[in-house]
Length: 116
Length: 114
Image (tube, rainbow over all chains, first blue to last red; front, side, top):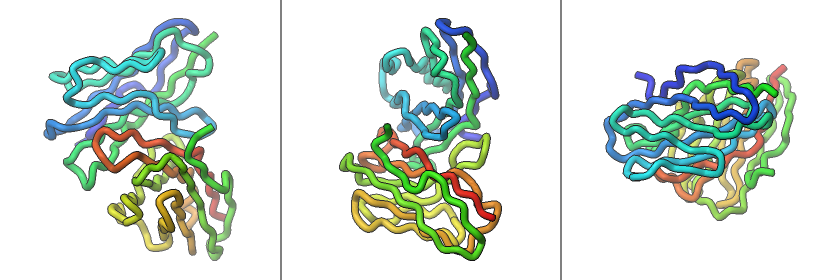
């Protein structure tokens, strides 16, 4: 069974607007961590934001926020005031104790294009 | 600039060659990782080192041989690779191999097998 699902293969947004990238996850472990990474076409994976399963508040990092809905098992990334440099592939990932030694499992990714 | 440095950035090698990929971090992290990423796919975990000991090998073929000489360095030795091994190889590190530890990635090595 797929542990991380990103249903949007591609998304388009106008510069300066906000955009939400969807992510749902599946785990029976009460302890887990959720991560979002950005990968520009140059290849480096950039860590954006982290949400722990016991965190009471949604994580925020600058223009990035994570809309964490635990009961729905969703961890959507919200990017506010999009910039041209935000165009990249975005991966949602989860780490739990279900696999071996807290393996980080990635979704298939969403390709975000910011239009001027 | 990332705090995880990978060399070389690009590598082209024949199927009979022996080469090594190198990864270095100076953040004091005690867990280091190798991932393989094919085009338009998410990264796939290959190996995990925790406190310089191999803790995970995701059934990787023996033509890939990891090595962790010290807490700052991680190597991936390559021998007799196949064309399907052409990919982006990413190194990552984290404080420890825990649930809440974000992994910080290098820029990767783009490997092409002729």
